[in-house]
Each structure stands twice: as structure tokens, then as C-alpha cells.
Image (tube, rainbow, N blue to C red; front, side):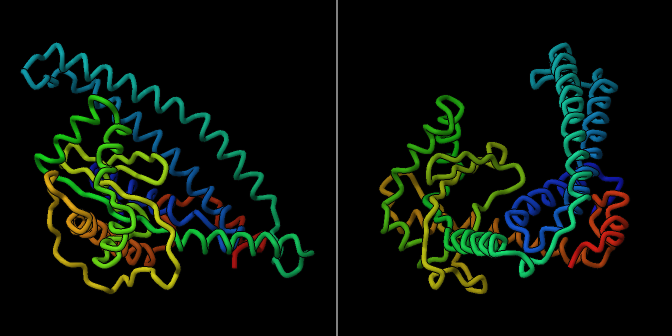
Length: 305
């Protein structure tokens, strides 16, 4: 839940909420629900624009306290001014986003959705297609190839800075032994519905691989998308063994799979946070991004389940 006084905590809350929405909005069982979501996004964009403008003002107001790591105040002030200018430009660019979302919301408010069973075959076919797509998504999992931290991660992080994330993916792909790695990950439970990432992690996608990196925390992970039968999906209640951090010397597939334990622990921690926030949100009336007038329009038009 938002604090309304702690910008750091509320920024993390907003980030997690948007991440959850990105995952949940991959499909809508009831298309009429999208209208309210658009309204919440519109309100969120307006709040985001205000927040960015305020953070830009703070950088200008306190620029006299800015220094670089070497104690150079002139360099610190210069970076504070650049930060403020870039933030102001970002806030201004959101005007176009707000305008398009507002137009989309108005158009969506004029739609009267009919039940799928009352139409002629076309909607039913589309529903079946969506169901097939959802089933395909459920059968797709992410297998951990390797997870590095400490000095081993620093080597890969330097490679990312020097040659880019694609070079790091190519380097870490040497830990992928194909079916052997997949089997080891399945056995140890290091397979995920989505790539496990933290708030500050950076993701890079290349083919079936996704690279996660976090210079601040000093870790790097590589995951491969793998299609498996539904009967082989993971049981969320199955405990995960303690992690063993892999090394770059003489690593084999089993050790690579065990090394993903840190990712699994981080994924479980994030899941717990989301669950706690979800429980708290259910006790309130609507989202904290709720857009004024959404509920009234839905009620007047008879929308919703």
C-alpha cells in the first residue's frame, strides 16, 4: 500500500504494481474490464508526470549540495542540471501519452460488450483462439542456465559494459548443455513461469535467452525459454533446495542448475511481497491509481461481470 509520504517506498510500490499489471494484462477474461484498466493507467500517467517534474525540481533546488565521487562540486552541479533537464523532457513527453490514453478511454467507454454466446461463431472462435494462446503460454517455462555473483559476476558485468549484453549472453550460453541442463533444472525445481527479476535488474532478450543483470547488487543470470507439457509444470508448494553458487571453472550443467537457487529465493521473496500487497489491496475500494468517473460510467452502462 502507498505511504503518501515516503517517495522511495511508494516508487517501489508503483514499480511492482506496474510489473504485476504487465503480467496480468496478457489476457482479459472479461473485455469490459479493460475500460477501468485504461482509466487507472491514465491516472497513473498523470501521477507519473507530476512525480517526474517534482524530482527534476529537487535536483535544481539542491544542486549546490551535489559533488562527484572525487569531491568535485562543479562536476556534481553539472550532473544535477543534466538530470533535471532530462527529467523535465521526460515529463513533457508524457503529454502525448496522456492524450492518447484519454482518447482511448473515451472510445472504450462507448463500447457495449455482448456475451460471447450471443454472437455468431466469430467471437466464439476468437475466444477459443485466446484460450489456445493462454494454454501455449502456460506450457512455456524459463529454465535457469547459470546465476553468478561476486567476482564471477563482475567479470560478466565488465563484458556487458565493454561489448554489450549480447556478448554476455553468448558468453554465458556456454553453460547451456541443452537437454542435460533442462533435466537438471527440472529435477531441482529451477524452472519459472516468468524470468525472476528484482526491481533494479536489467533484462535483455536474445532469441530464447533472457539475460538479467544488476551491477548494484553484483549478480548476473541467464535463462532459456523452454516449452514443456502441462503435466510437467512445477508444483509451487515443492520446497527448493538451498542454492550452490556456480563457478566459471569446470562448471557442469547440474552445478549451473543449482546455482539458480539465489534466483529462486529472490523470486519467492518477490512473490511474497506481491501476495501481501494483493491481500491489502483487496480490503480497499479499487486501485490506488483509480481514475475518477470510471466506476460511475461502468455502472451506468451496465458494464462488468
